Image 1 (cartoon, rainbow, N blue to C red):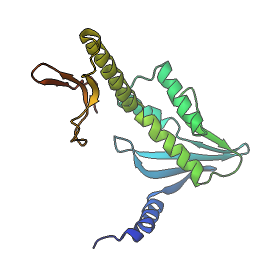
Image 2: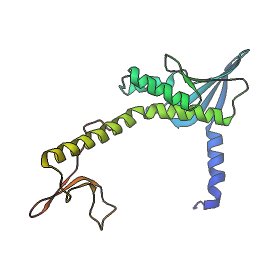
Image 3: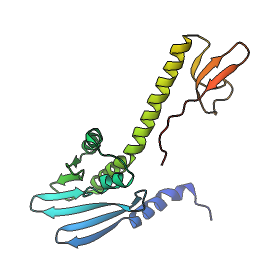
Image 4: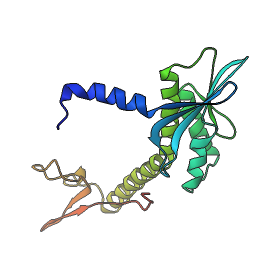
Length: 192
């Protein structure tokens, strides 16, 4: 049986609502488990704690801890990236990289979603840095080749045949007397 387009919102609501669980751990502490997973299969979970000071949402450092499993070195610069991600999403990153948000009132669904989003963004850091490194390498390689060959209006960066926009874009198009050289530069970084 095929799903009708008008049924998708209801199916999505039901699937997401049923996929979240809330377990009471002890006095004033709950574990909110989501359907979202780390690469190793562990779930994104948020702890909710209540005290006289109010409410605390925290991942207890699980997002940053999973970076260590991927051999991602959390140096000072990368720690600042985590702090910035937390700040942008209304959370704080502790020195131990726990993502937290203090609230006067019980959190709503958006507070929990912000915490989960921040966890996902922290997990993406190794991949974002690799992509940025590749773009920087490709930009430097193009500049080096053009620096050696000199400027020529017939050369083009980010080129594809005019009639084929669905092809991969070449980093450089270098016409020769008889033909053309189409260059693709590939950075050397792990993809997994």
